[in-house]
Amino acid sequence: MDEQHQGHRRGEPCCEGGREDQGPNQRGGPEGAEDHLDYTAGLWEKAFWQSLHEVRVEFLKERIRDAWGKGMKETSQAVLEAMLAEWKRFQEQEEQRSQTREEGPRERIKDYFRKALRKAPQ
Image (cartoon, rainbow, N blue to C red; front, side, top):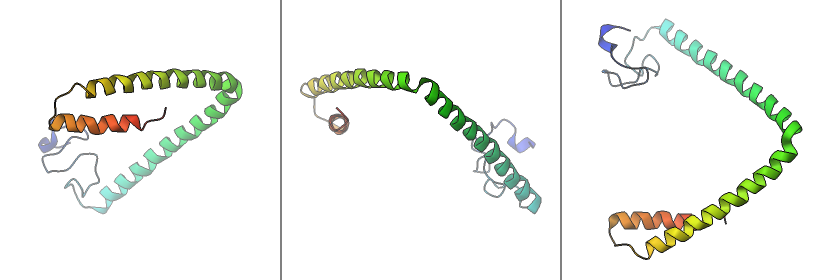
């Protein structure tokens, strides 16, 4: 990192108007072919490791479902029922609050969100 970029964290806006995690030309860096090759190779390397991680996750998901699936299904149903009951209580509290509020721009915005809450699953 040269003196001009010292003090910037990776990903923060750069003094040239770009971000340090963008491609060479996007952040105002050198335009040489080698920079582009290095940048592109880095993207492919990152994609490889991310993909390998995702494959490992998929394998583990299968094994976990086989081993614990039945119990987890029953537990997830109980959790869902409890959360829906909590959601219903939350909706009722919001309805009570909406009946005792003052009118203004902030309240109109809140009304919008209250209406969206009413449309949520029951």
